[in-house]
Image (cartoon, rainbow, N blue to C red; front, side, top):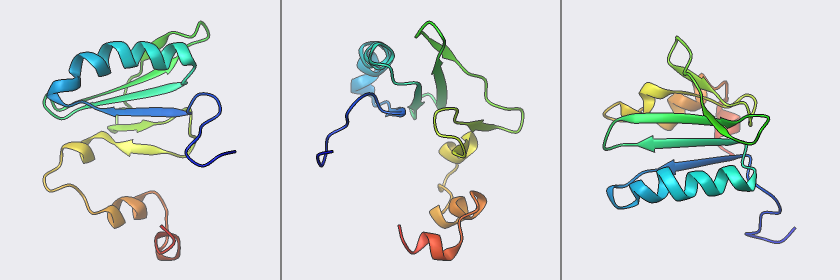
Length: 113
């Protein structure tokens, strides 16, 4: 393994859309990640206040996932990783230590970050 080198597809790709990259992120990158085997793809669109979560199905095609009734999306590619979608649109954003606490991290964990 070399520094800054990934052998094979990432487990998860997250794109934050900016006005100038909307077509690239929703089109070309979406298709490239799907084709290269990235199992999970998240799109965060601050301008529209929307978040989309995609998983590759058995045929290798991304399918839009539904956020749970409690407003939480749970990653399938990275078990244990979840996000309250409302966190992304809160102003001010929630403090990172608050999020880490909800994820079950203790202060000893957070001091190692």
